[in-house]
Amino acid sequence: MATQRPMTLGAYKKSKPVYESVKDEMRRNLIAKLKSGEQLFPGIIGYDQTVIPAITNAILSRHSIILLGLRGQGKTRLIRALVAFLDEYIPAIEGSPLNCHPLRPGCAYSHRVLRERGDETPIAWIHRDQRYQEKLATPDVTIPDLIGDLDPIKAAREKRDFSDEEIINYGIIPRTNRGIFAINELPDLQPRIQVGLLNILEENDLQIRGFPIRIPLDLVLVFTANPEDYTNRGNIITPLKDRIDSQNRDALSGHGR
Image (tube, rainbow, N blue to C red; front, top):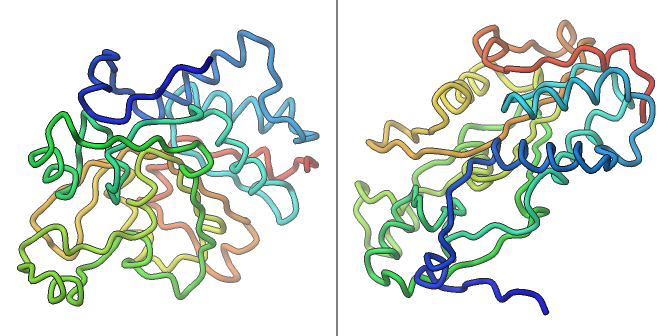
């Protein structure tokens, strides 16, 4: 019979949990797959000597990743397969917009619930499939889409002051906290939007409209790009490119699928 998962903070504490970052979690699961001889990317053909070893090394090194290659070479399929290196379920404070770990609350909502309910704080268990999000880069993508913005309607409806962090409407990146976030065709993002990603890559946190808060994020960021687009539609700004740890160029000449 399967062990019952703890559903409150008090019960969770009794299991003597240890906090682990997403990068460490993926590294641990990758090592376990390597030791067992399990196929790392089932269904991916043609990259056993090029792309897959490079991605393996990137996960072991706890790196962010960019795959460079032409269309139709399986870049998106490869990054979606990274979900298999996440734990099947992880605990989070129920209702937290940032999937906050019970032992490491990162947003105002989670801090408030912990103050109010203590060990009775309800715990939700998030499946690995819910921890992956991706966004196709297009010229109309905005900073609020990716990172977030203040929500004046919520402030008025809930009678909250604009100094209250809980009026923030988080974008897709912070809502993927403790997971994997992918941006397809990175060069298509406007340069000013790419600048907004710098702090996340460099400091693992975000700031919204000068709001006097810093929210720590625990993310694995992956990107894809088609080098042909560099001259046709855009480019990756140098400061951002320099902060992407692993750049996989083997995808350019590969024939995988």
